[in-house]
Every structure is written in structure tokens, then in C-alpha cells.
Length: 114
Image (cartoon, rainbow, N blue to C red; front, side, top):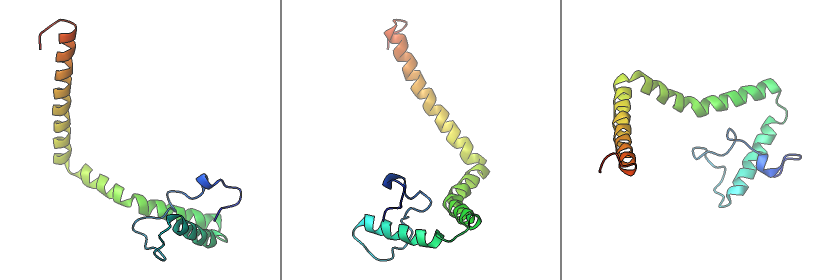
């Protein structure tokens, strides 16, 4: 299905796109057919909806999508030991890379042998 006045590449959005966790209405072997069916269902659902209700649906969809990310963020922020260990490993790795780079630069400009 093509929405009138909207180019195909601009139809749909990340909020309303099919998700791996969404149960399919049927098991179609054609992903475009499934997408078109879902788009048709969404268009029918939102056709007579007020802007306020539409915004509420979009807000709920966004919240549902980012809730696991927010939860993981809060879990990590609460674990100071984990943050410290990650930053220490990062500093060690950066120090190692910088040391090798500096040695190579010094060698290339003739300040020391490798």
C-alpha cells in the first residue's frame, strides 16, 4: 500500500515499524506484504484519531521502546564499581596504544631506537 502524497522511502517510522517481538498476523514469506498489512492496519487505527490521542499513542510507543535502555542506564549508573573498572580498563588500553604510537613517532623522527 502506498500512502498518497508521501514517497515510499518516507512512509513508516521506527516507532511503527515491525519488531521481532511483534507476533505476525500470519506467516507471510514476503516481508513487504507483512509491512504493507501492518501499515494498512495502523492507518485504519489512526484515521479518525484526534491529534491528542495520536500524540499519546506515539509517546507510549517511544516510552516502550526506550524503557529497557533507561533501565540499563540506571543500573549501570548505580554500580560505581563497574564504572570504575570500565574506566580503568579504558585508561590502560589508551595508555598502551599511546605508548606504542609515541615510540613509533620517536623512532621515525630519529629520537630513539625501537
